[in-house]
Image 1 (spheres, rainbow, N blue to C red):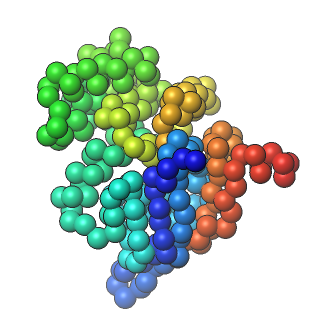
Image 2: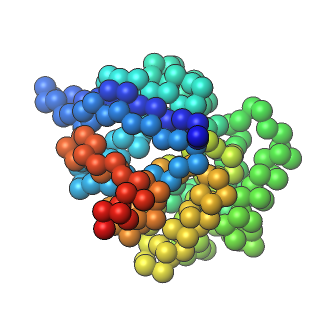
Length: 236
């Protein structure tokens, strides 16, 4: 039995603007186990990216409890949230989010420089290993502007996995790519999952969602479906 890595109980998120309350998430309860590959899908504005932000400790819930591994992260300081996020979570964004005046190697290493538990030599080894995994070691000294969109996203994947995080969070990882590069990035995520990575991906693409072990559907801030690949296959 896999260990529970993410546990959300009664999570609510309300945004307050000029006396208007927007209920982005309502009473979300779910768990993600180590080694799972989960997709979260739903229409625009349904709350899926808000949910991913909360899981990634980029934002905090209005109400509810959140455990990440051994940490109760429901109500912790900004500094502690940043420390846990940097060590435990790897992010892949739709727009790559690479820094233009840093080369590939420096972009991948950047999150690791905030880790006090790593020496410079350890960081360099981790960067090299991550770039090898995504077949981008030969581009280590290139800058983002010298890379195609697909190559930039591979570098972003390397940055996400370099610190050996507990979970990889991918927010529309193929949203800015053509179909060929999108397939290549999804194959890379499949490979990482096969090697043991825990992945949680927000996607609007049904083909990408189908690659996951488990598919969660969100509508109006609530989970309306949560199915494993096996049950989807049986239903079909």
